[in-house]
Length: 196
Image (cartoon, rainbow, N blue to C red; front, side, top):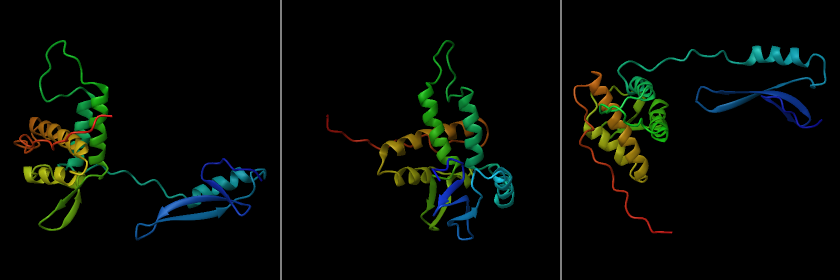
């Protein structure tokens, strides 16, 4: 009765269980524990396979982002950055964008894609994930507002602003929008730090 190292299985009070996680109707995470025979039992593998098929939720087909939204733009922009897109034409022989810069871009693109960044409409008091917002009606005031909501971490706000400027420049160059509303937005001041 040693420790069990079978993925998804766990021993509680001496009994081996297969654990399944799911979210209920209110969105709270719940667990289902289904008892299993001991791993030394000859029927263990068959029983584990049966339980996995019976209780596991079928994989939901992943829906792509709605066309015209920041989610769709982020997806297209990520591919363009991966292929070497920059907002300016590169001179022959110029160095490519550093991998650390591309990684930073992808980090913030990922935050847009997964809904981490939220736009809070002050007028309607409605919060919407940035990935669900339409690109065309975005205005400079919206970008100022998102930047200012991150003001407690100015470095993060400035990195987000930089990626938004690049994405909207890409959108302008590829006819998503007529003109980028983020061109004239300046970064937040970072302030001075005490030397070590």
